[in-house]
Image 1 (cartoon, rainbow, N blue to C red):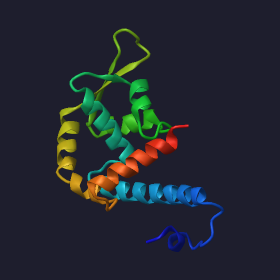
Image 2: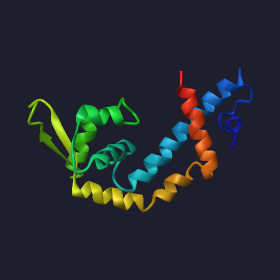
Image 3: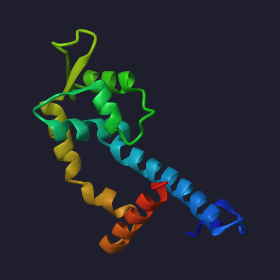
Image 4: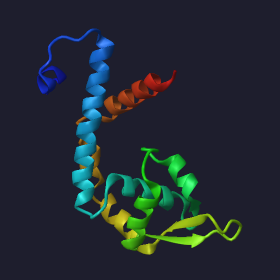
Length: 149
């Protein structure tokens, strides 16, 4: 459905305004679809992001600050997200031997198993945008260009 129909607005001040509004609307729509998908597995999109970051470092750990710097949403409440993952047994936290105030965070075997289950359904996530490979690559390149200021 066209953005004009979705937000019931037919006039925009410029093509750039229309594109920006369309991007914001689509990002919100995509985030809702992702939350619905990850909810089936008992986690949020932000928690999934943390698990993927930690899986990329496995078997090594990451500091809380390093995880936050790699997050898609860097405004996330890291202590709350990590505590929920810890309570679900999906991560492990250990006091950093070099800095007793810091924690090293590891993905647990349960976290790895959950990611493997989610990966079996990756095509659902990939299909949300309804784009072929060439279109997806073009969109990604345009979004990179839009942020290159």
